[in-house]
Structures are given as C-alpha cells and as structure tokens.
Amino acid sequence: MAKKKILFINQEIAPYVPDTLMSLMGRDIPQAIQEKGYEIRIFMPEWGNINERRGQLHEVQRLSGMNLIIDDTDHPLIIKVASIPTAKIQVYFIDNDDYFNKRLMERDAQGEDYSDNGERAIFFTRGVLETVKKLRWVPDIIHCQGWMSAVVPFYIKTAYHDEPSFTNTKVVTSLFGKSLTKGMGDNFKRCLEFRDATTELLAPYKDDFDFDELGKLAIDYSDGIIHADEAVNKDLLDYTTEKEIPILKYKNESFADDIEDFYNQIAPDDTSDEEED
Image (tube, rainbow, N blue to C red; front, side, top):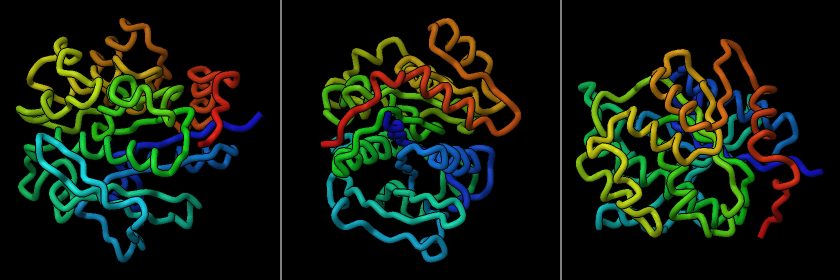
C-alpha cells in the first residue's frame, strides 16, 4: 500500500532561521518522515531575516501571481523554493511585500509583536492552501507547527472542506511554548471570515485572540495534537484532553517513529489512498 502524503506547514525551519526547538523540528521531522518513504511537501514564511542568496531561494513563477484579499485589501502572493542539501528536502516559501519582506518574524527590531500578526498568519495559511491546490497534490495529513499555522485546521474544516485537495485530509497540530506577548489584532475575527469560515463559528472565542486562544482554535479543529515542547501551557493540554482529541505526549528526544504511529492512528491506511488529480 502506498505511503501517505504529508504536508508540513511550519513556522520555522533550520537553517533558514536561527536554531530553536521549533526550527530544528521543522527540519528534522520532515526529513525523518521522508526517509521512511513518505511523500512530503513543506511550506514556511519567507521571513525578512532569511538570506535569499545564501539559502538559494528563487521564485516559482507558475505558482506566484495570485492576489489574496485580507480585510478588503489585495495582497500579492509570491512563492519561492529552495532545497536543504544536507536534509535532501525542498521547502516552499510564502512571501509578500506587506507581510514578510524586510520584516522580522513575530517581533520587530524593538522586540514588539507586530500588530498585524493575525493578518500575516491568515495570509500565510491561505497562501499555502491555494498553492497546494495549484500543485494538484492531495495530502493525507497536514502537520502544523507554530502559531503562524494555527488557523490551518479551522480553514481545512470550514473554508476548504469541499475542495478536492482537502476533502479527506486530517490535520495534526504540534503545540509549542508561548511565543507571542500580544494578541492577533483587533480585526482578527473579521479577517478570518472566508467562505464557510464564518464569524459565527468564532463566537465561542474571546475577541482578544491571544496566543492561548489561538491554540484553542487550532485544537478544536485538529484531528490530533502533538505535545512538542515541554514549555506548552498546561491549560492547553488539559483543554485537548477535555475535548477528547488524540494527543501524542511530549518526549525529550527525537520521536519520528512515534509521530509515524500517530499519523497512522489519525489516518488509518484504509482511508489514506487518495489519488492525485
């Protein structure tokens, strides 16, 4: 039976950004899963601190050019690609002059969270999902890492639920420690509204969408949760348990084998063989 197709939507991947627990996992887990014979695709934002020349990024013209409307404003989508020779994996980058070019990651040079982080996360998510549609590639599982991908589960189960590329896709979210000090912006709920992703579905959540509230949104619409960081807020882990969502508990070591088993638990083989368009 063919191996599953895994789409990794990562906030950070080494060596394009400094080494952190998240960026190292962002590289090592996809590499390990690919070495097990799975077909993978990987996406991350093209943060302004990425050295394009050193990383050998180049634009993919056939995938670029789409405009995404966020809060009634058009934002051009630019897709770039590069390879990590040591890991033998290819990475797609989501770029946009307004949200990423010449800007750092979650915080500016003064150490303040960007006020439009919510919009940036929405643009990144929609950019990835629209690009995967263009690639005509049907993932069995989407694995999300970092707050930038936290709205992916919500969109997969609402706005994109009837898209052929994602109809049977399961979503796994890795939880990490808190990395934002402010909320996602006053207009976050309004900006999230897209197709069947309505503001009514967001009524149970606080208007001040902080880091933990964003985590709850990801948990509610995920099929499985990975406790990836010892520093994860215990309240989010308890929330996952209360919702009776499968969870892979934290281990202070590389656990690719456990993740593979978890994938098979979330998407059993008899439901995973989707043909490409």
